[in-house]
Image (spheres, rainbow, N blue to C red):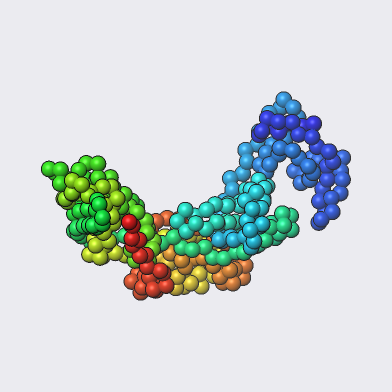
Length: 360
């Protein structure tokens, strides 16, 4: 019996072995520095420290590098879908480099690892060990939309049916905010032209319409709305009417406010032998990348650059080809920036433009 200091629990070691390929050769003891194997551990996970009871010698676990490559993962059948999450979480317990998460904007499940061979090994384990088959594909790029100009518009929703009708009327101004600021709503109503209880409905209508996008169905961000005037009807006005008025005003403002697409820009670090530096720099320029700097460490070169995420989805295989398998890279999300007009036109042309839903 030994103690797992990381989890404060007892663990029983049955047989010690050393691995020779797939074959486990039993040994009577392991010394400091040896790499051994033991089967059927109850609570121990990767990074835990085991030892004699009462010693409490805790070894700090290694800092793991962030994943370098991400794929969207789709189960092949409904049965595979039910087994996927438990199987991946089992693999994550033994391999600390795996990341598995859902992108809230694209609603895709994403699997991240240290490279193409690592991701393929995970997929192979899922099939062999947990009988779960999945398909890998490049993840969707989480574009966003924003505005570059100011706008002023009126949203007027009027519907007359038998009995009570619907009436809501609001006037808003829109202006851009700094990148990353999100959304700001200012209530500038004076004199009760819109009753106080209907103001949140106008904001809600604007937010719902912004979430559906204007150009290509991506969320609109980094803008400010000022509600400054409107009118209401004593009988026909209600929250739904003012929510619809807010939507109409938002879409009219978007027509005037110079809408633009935003794309995620990644901070990329590439390490490779110095003889490949020229080819790598040329390739980054072709990917709309902006090289931030280059350092030499002996015969290795480290290149730092900012590159659009859309251009980096299959970079792992390209890097292997350019450096004869001797290069590595890592990247992380840095900021959002405006998509150049020719690229934006292609994205908008292939995307389904959102249609404003009619609500009763």
